[in-house]
Amino acid sequence: MSNKNYELSVSFNGLSKSELISLVAFFERWGWCSNVGASGFVGYYVDGDGSFHPKIEMMHNSLEDMGLTQKRFDELKKRAEVLPEDQRTCRYAFDPDWVSNSLQKAIEI
Image 1 (cartoon, one colour):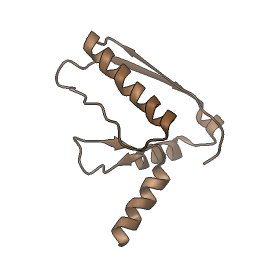
Image 2 (cartoon, helix red, strand yellow):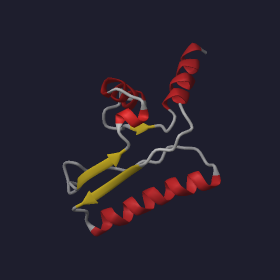
Image 3 (cartoon, helix red, strand yellow):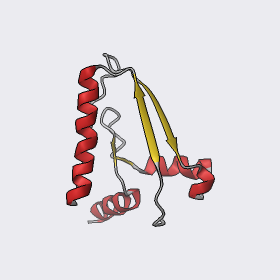
Image 4 (spheres, one colour):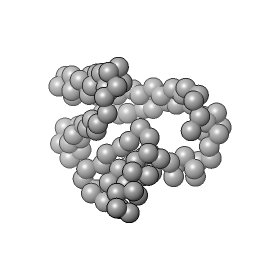
């Protein structure tokens, strides 16, 4: 992966007050991990059959800017999913190559 910086903007519309507060806490935790150099999974419970139904819009660099085709982009998104066999608990990693290599080494041991 290159050292170029990319940008992602995410907009949530239709959140309840408690959902907004918990999402702020979630993103603040990401920021804290980044600032202190901590590693770990940070998750957010989505009650999709309950009250959590915000409209989510994302804007990011173009695939061309990232040097990716749509097919490769989709493949990398799938590789970013950690332990996907559990359909109710999806976890994602910032470095899919590291996670894939670590899981492969664990399987080999």
